[in-house]
Image (cartoon, rainbow, N blue to C red; front, top):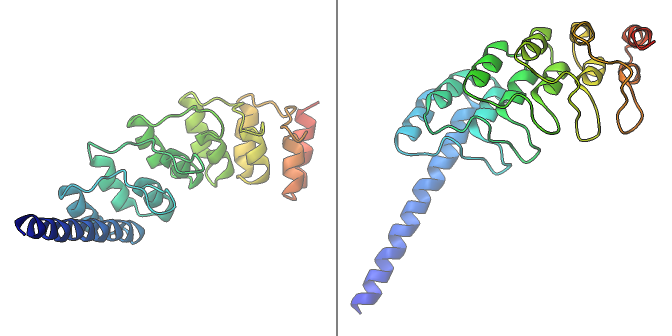
Length: 211
């Protein structure tokens, strides 16, 4: 009988602990989405893991940078247990998101914290080239980004800039030595990417540079 009561008590404690953890999990990601740094800080002080991922595999820092929740990002970055390079299921890191958003300050801060600049597959430079801020492209190159980095299908940062990024980003990559003659696994070069994005003037410039 005593064993039975102990077992019941253990079950209640386990359920209570699970409920508390589940509540903290929901509170954490809700706070990240609305930039509620105070709640995030309180949860971290109570032992919540700053590297926790949501149901889609996105960690808090990545989401904070994606959503513009920069107060939360600040709180997370200060935590000594934060792993700055945790990738999501599609192999994207917080640095890649900062670069895509064109956030030069956070790109610098993440690199200073030890974020990986050059990596296999898609890189922060690919993402910066696709974004709105050419200064991030220049900054990553200054920090040693591989200008001809290849994505899994052979796409280069110049190709991404040609179709998706700022016009100035493509020009800066060209000026720094990016090769407009390179082609990806589908046989497309940077001019082809520009043409796919209805950027005829840029496509003509890239074709001229490839001669």
